Length: 428
Image (cartoon, rainbow, N blue to C red; front, side):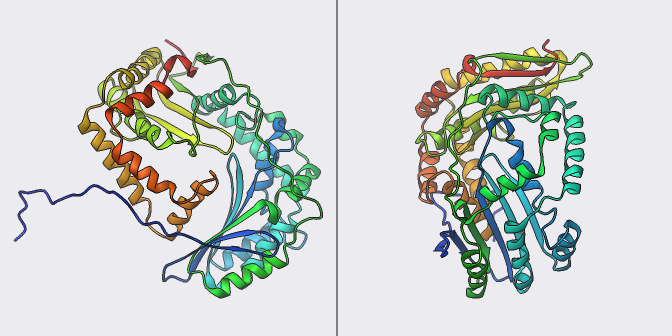
């Protein structure tokens, strides 16, 4: 009989098995990564292209091209595209990030014959109609005007600009930038960026030979490279703000202040990155973190405070974010500095470190719920110039990190005096 007075045995996670993709290269040079698993006749197909920035001061063009991909081709209007996709019970979703843009199709296998030619049409023949462009500009402008009134939104803009200067990573669009968008610029960027030599195809689900054959015909043979070489995405020129700069945007009627602080950091390819993720988790990376325990649970200054470490293609950044009552804004900054200093000066208790290890391993395992999750893990490392062996290194670092190593990393990367601090609201 089960003895419910005793906790069940538990074991540390020392490894997990990731599904490795099969790689195919189509005739036009398009690399294809295939994750074939599962019994459901369902696939997720992602067409991913690297963002090409013709002008650092107008990076909004890349966002507009991505968000307007489904607004019509020379054959189908936006309404016709939406109706066809919906009729087949599929989802077709464009998505934009700092370094890549993607178009993702979720579909039953039996409908791919009808849907894949439609996707190819979108990727080769989007026309960005003037009427839809005018609507996009009007709606985006209105959305921006509303968002600019939110302290958290403005704090993020100020932070990015301070940390990354006028580069694409620091770019924050203004209303006037939307008014500069024109159809010819969108068409030119679309022609340079959405090309097989600038793309990657990731296919996950029940991927049969028939699916690969269809993809190769439409996106390997019929989707040909242009006559000239694809534009190269070079690293941006980053001129960050002075280390430790304090930026205050006063809003006299504010009831809460949005706080954002941080600095440029290390990328995923750096050997210290997994260890710094442990330090970040201790500080503010989960609900039981030190910042939450202090600023939310003990002081009651905020509903939530968090820290994060983000790796980009050409840079990376560490950030802490929260929104607090205006009367405790300055006090919150004091407590954030205090928690950073504790990590730098005092060894973290082994019990706390063990909790964070277990949390990070559990989170990693919990994220591998289906074949799509395995594909996502692959993309994280692939676009960082790494392979899946990185996760073996990640597990080893998390499970073996010592109190002394946590202190070393905290002293190397968590210097409050060198961090940009942004306050939108009131500093009191």
